[in-house]
Length: 303
Image 1 (cartoon, rainbow, N blue to C red):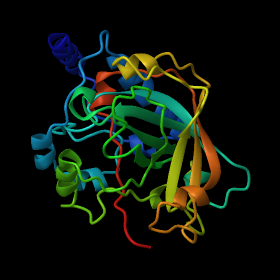
Image 2: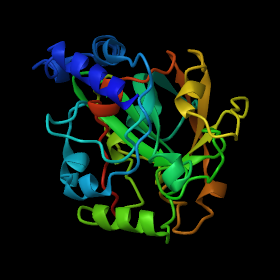
Image 3: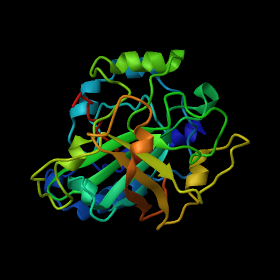
Image 4: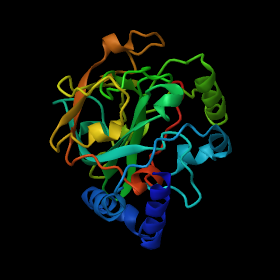
């Protein structure tokens, strides 16, 4: 199976698709989504799923993490290697806001986006640890991005991807693997278990800058309770995701305002519904989605 993955990688590279067009950033949001989906993701769809990979701590250590925090493009640099969350599936999505939401920018709604669902690493190594990365496209401007996890240690032997909520802020874990990962990310941020959401509130999907930037301090993505996959026996989550049809409400998004947020665990109790994430395609596993599609992480800072 690994040999097949290498053949697919060679075939993809042989297509000479090149990097993103020079004027890509000036495109409309719908055009960007259409291009990445049809000309990149679908063109490199796996014929057979490559095996899940362990977290590559050595490669993660040598990764230029500053790039992860600052790169504005939707595609990785040519020398990038995904050392964590190496395998996943991508779907087109839209963010449907709650009426009269107070949060600005893309929290007001986004019709064109991509959602990548993945595992931190091979569950046989660290347990089943779901995570997501979300990209919302903006007319003639860089996309808004954020990531979320269930936790740094995952959910053990429970193989249902939608068993637990995810958040952009997770508690510090004391087990060896997460501690090492946190230490590596501490080279570029004081808060390796927290991601900032300001970039999503600065501009709306039409490229209009917010007159007053207002964003949640923390979000919680609550899975649709009607989406249920087997907890056991061990199986490949990508096969589960492939059964989700277009038009599915995946997550209800809850947010807690900066004024109400604290450092305690009661942020979830204070959070209110701010919108929903709905698929506008099926989930696809592809070489591009695993190796080339880029999601920016925004450093967290004290308010």
